[in-house]
Image 1 (cartoon, helix red, strand yellow):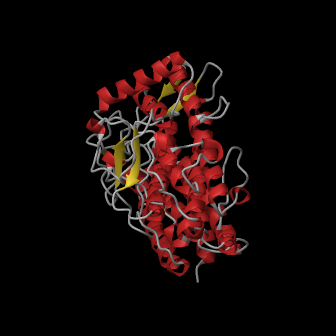
Image 2 (cartoon, rainbow, N blue to C red):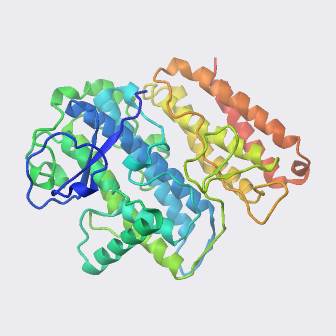
Image 3 (cartoon, one colour):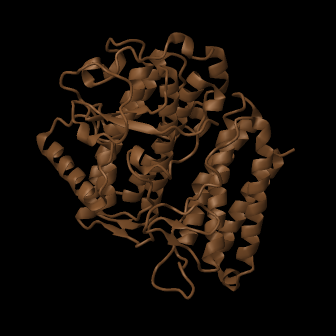
Length: 455
C-alpha cells in the first residue's frame, strides 16, 4: 500500500498566521469562506494524487477516532440520568467503522485495490485533526471530540459560542488547535465533484477557498464493473444500524457518499443523532455527574509495540498484564489483516465473507472480552492502585496489496498469539481467573477459523 502522505493545512481568508506548512496549490482570492483552513497533500501534482492522499489520511483519521472512542468507552463504568453513555459510544464506533470502509470504496474507485489504507497516523500529529491519544473519558477529551466533529456552521448562536469556548479550552490545555474532520472531507468532496460549479448536496464553490479547476476527471475513475466486483456493501457488515458502506463509481456517487459520512459526523442534516450532537450530550451527562469513569492510564502500551508519542504514555509492565496487552494487540491486528485481506477478494468469494465475519466477531465480542479482562489487571509489579487499559497497538501500519501475501501475515499473528496465550497460562493468576479463561477460549475459536482459511 502507498506510503502515507504529509498534509498541508493552508489558511483560508488571508490569515497566514495559522499555516502549518508551506502553502498548497495556488488559488484565487475568495469571498467570505466557510472554512478557516483546508488541507492538501503536500507533494500532490494532480487532483487524482491529492484525492487519493487525502482519502488515505481520512482512513487514518477514521481509524484513529474509532479506536479513541472505544478506549473512552472502556473507561465507562456506568451512566445514569436516562442516557446510556456506553451504548452511545458503541454506536458511534460502529458508524466510524462504516466511514472507514466507505473511504476504502472511494480509494478503490480512484486508485484500485492497491490504494486501500488501514494504517493509523501516530507519528504526524501536526497535520491531522487531533493527535492520537488513548484517554479515559473526561471533560477535556469529550471537548476535543466535539470540536473535531463540529459542523462548518452552527445556526444556534448559543451553541456556536459554547463550541467556540470548548475549542479555546482544548487549545489552552493541549497547545493544539484541533482541525475539523469536516474540512478534510470538504477538501476531498471538492476534488471529487466534476467542476467548479456547485454540485450535489454540499454546494461548494471557489468562494469557499477551494482551488479552481482542481477536480478529478471522469476518466480517473476505475472501470465500474471492476469497482463493483470488489467494493464492500453494508450487508457484509451485518447491516448494523447506522453503518454506511456506499459503493462509489463516479463523481455523483462519490460526492453523495462523502456527504453521508459528513452528515453523520457533523450533523449538517436536520437530525439530533450525529456524532457532534451525541458527543455534546455525552459531555452534558459527564459534566452533570451522571457518568462514573475508571481512571485508566493514558496511552497504555506494552513492550514490542511502537511507543506512543504522548509524554503521558504508560507501559504495562506487570508480568501477568503484559501478555494480555500483547494478545489484545495481536487480535486487534488480526482484525485489520482480515479486513484488508478480505477486501482484496471479489464480492461473493467465500473466503472474503469468512474473513469479514471473523473480523466482526473479533471486534464484538472478543475484543470486548479482552478489554474487560485488561481493565481489571494491574499496571506495574508490585501493583499499585492503577488498573490497565487496552493498548490498541497495531502489528504493522502498512498492509500488503496482494491477497497472496496474507497467508504469511495471518500465520505470524497466529504464532505470536500462541506465544502470548502460553505466557498467560503460565502465570499463577490464571488458574483461578474464570473471566480470563473464557477470553482465551474466545480467542482460540477465532484462531481455529483463521487457520481453516490458510493453505
